[in-house]
Length: 182
Ligand code: IMP
Image (cartoon, rainbow, N blue to C red):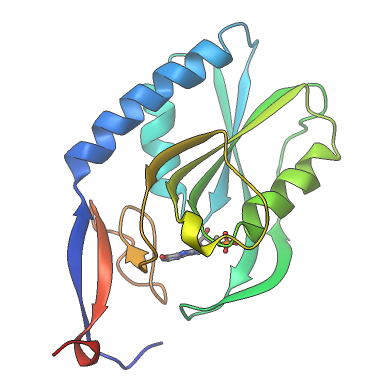
């Protein structure tokens, strides 16, 4: 838990997020239009708000499942190791899968989870991330759909936390440390 004081500047409004999700849902529907049922896999915990809004815009038969991987501690620094903390409940072999992530930062998490789930031989698998920080990339990975490309700033809100705080903000905000300014 941080002891540094910070404030949050709004970066992406709730309204802009909602509009973008509508457009993304149309593209996903077009891609998976013939699916018997799409397995929408949320990466816990940061994607829980995004997946809730996304599936409600998605005019397709869906099943929702979750997986939890960790590459982050309670700090703004990424560690390289990706561990699976909680696996899917359902089977995905031969099925259509959409992996839903909050942010692609270094790229380690989504690339490792994609690889992990590809080994189960889904029929089709695609990835979507609400946010992308291309400046921070360490592995060559690009999600199939991105909500917003953002600069190299630490963000919170809309499900995304800083040391387990601020997940409940309805918008995406940038964390500004008060002792950094002046
Ligand atoms: P990656 O493995 O470096 O791509 O990191 C992905 C994960 O790091 C995301 O799912 C987030 O949980 C976390 N993360 C990356 N950037 C931020 C941020 O700006 N705020 C909060 N969490 C972040």
